[in-house]
Length: 464
Ligand SMILES: [Mn+2]
Image (cartoon, rainbow, N blue to C red):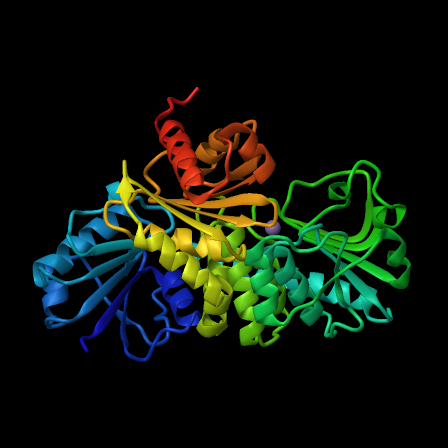
């Protein structure tokens, strides 16, 4: 490894550098300012006079040596960099300045500019954000520590972000499910979310508003009371804690409130709590948080903040890939595989659409088949359709650079059923009764041709 030369402009910066822990492997150089005392900062060698190539050839620079120039004075930096490059034309140079811009600096292919004080400042701000999170944790523990039964209330039909955040809050409070159960007014309906609680062994208890009386504390996670309908139960209008990333609503009281609309997921906030509290994030919890952040931000797509990215990176370190795979790719039942086999035997991609009609299947098979279908050669769209209960259910995936899947599905189900989704994934449900009314029959071939035509039309339909 080469040597590292640190050139400080004036005693103040030299002392600051020494303070923040100059490394033993650095050669410290100091250019005294005009006005200042020539008292030598400890460990520094003085560089006097004009900045010339001479000044630096004396240091006998070799390949692999690096230089830092620390100064807020434009002429000083330009003279120093020019002199360094005369003595060592290819040397990497780091300019540390809180005032100078790139335009103030000489051209050099291996020159990098950064701040000095601003770097320390960023760390300080970061530490304060940890402190703020720690303060939340202390408040929550103080306020809830003595309560016997704490209800962690999620939105009706809880989603992965809410479930993960609820689990994390329980860990922050040092509780287990008997004294701090996850509760909700409506059961989990989406098959992906059911797969999550199955894989993680999590219970979300569905309760009625009357059953809220069982709890002597109530925490709302990833939700605010207005979500519970026009006139929510009185008990949820005065709660102990609300931790959420949705826009702040009024009309309720909470002793502790932490609402961060800039965050893509409540799971990111709870990840910060866990870190600030110095708690170990076990693989199961890390996997839940990772999946929660991933699903609320649509895999770190839009609505993702730097905080979400950081939290994601943190839980990624500790998550279990095997567990995540079980959530994202739940085991396919045998009859689902047979249905897929039959559908694949007649598979074709027409007009960039790969449509697979499965017949009667378990609902979670459908999105997995759609996912797989997109891998077919020439497919820009994959649609998997199956009959679940009294409905025709279909999942849609696309390659991302075509019309948004959610829009297309809304056009396809218009007047027949419900549907929606995002840029590259969507889901639609059409009651068989409504389908039969329009198309006469609900056999495989009728479903195939009806969906195919509806999708061709919706995909090419001009935007209003
Ligand atoms: Mn959320």
